Image (tube, rainbow, N blue to C red; front, side, top):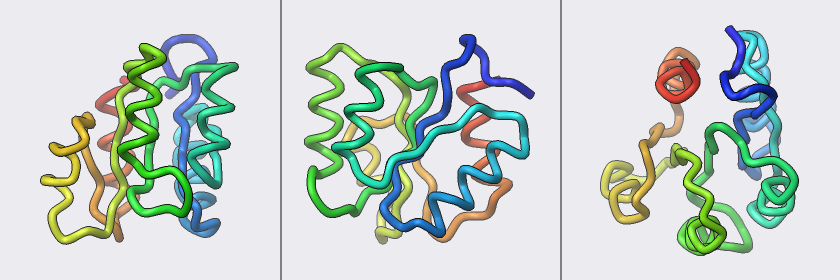
Length: 122
């Protein structure tokens, strides 16, 4: 399976290296083009040169908040679907508050990850 839209990748924004690498590996093994960033500031710089097909965004990270990150994308007229990855007690509420496309509750199964990404790349 290849990512539609040419070479547009899925962008994983996650500060925990183990999680970031596991997500990247799982998507890559499915033939999905993927890039990753350890923080939201790096992700914004990456998006300047290539808008991803989908963004997997960790909810809790140091630096820029998830809300600030999303507001910056909207100001730049970037409407890429964002999937929130969160360990919060009410991930659906967090996702609705931020106006994102969906969420994955941590810890999540790799099949759940693949299913949600496929919704936007299939």
